[in-house]
Length: 69
Image 1: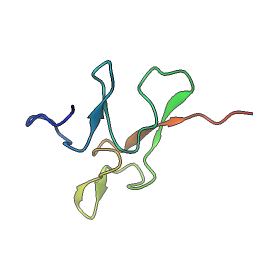
Image 2: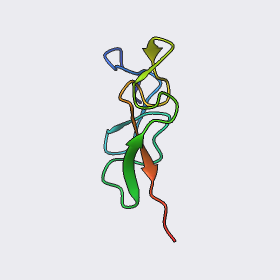
Image 3: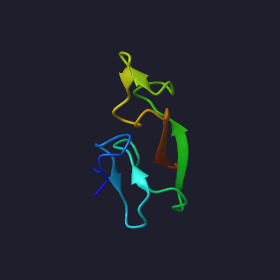
């Protein structure tokens, strides 16, 4: 799954709904308790050393679990 030749990021995976998740994502969009955050690897630029960030797939954003008490 997620490794089709047309995929922008072949290292991304797809969840059961077919939404592509990048390695830095902790949950799918719309999942309760998960929100968008700036990628800590590329600082939101989408690039690392001039190449696409492997953590966020070049978007500059990751989906992370929201903190709570």
